[in-house]
Length: 134
Ligand SMILES: [Zn+2]
Image (cartoon, rainbow, N blue to C red; front, side, top):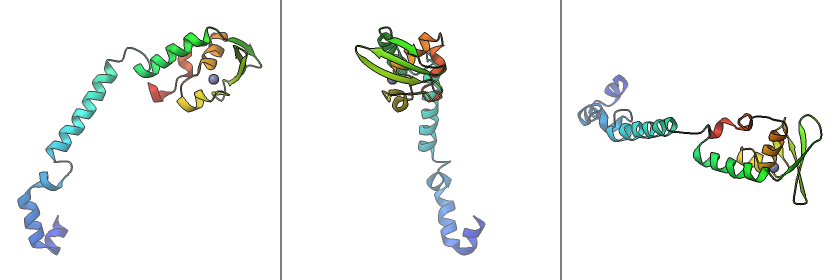
């Protein structure tokens, strides 16, 4: 502000008369209230979560768990699984968290083949979840 006063005294007076709520983002009441409301709403939504994942991600997992019940899993090695269903076959890599269906890579959520492999290995499904949906 001192630099502005030295360079342009009239501009300095104008800015001071207008008040910081006109030119400061921090002091703009509408913007500050909007940001506070945004954080408050998200905090409240996070506190009311009933599952480890968001509701949308939880629903996707439930549907995929239903599908994985009808799959046949054949371990290829400790991390690679061949998963079959209705004449189709996919390969899930547990170490890389990739599947040949590409859903795991695209959604960043375990696909039904990954869930079938996890179930075959008695793993907790939550170990396949990424923090993105938590
Ligand atoms: Zn898959």
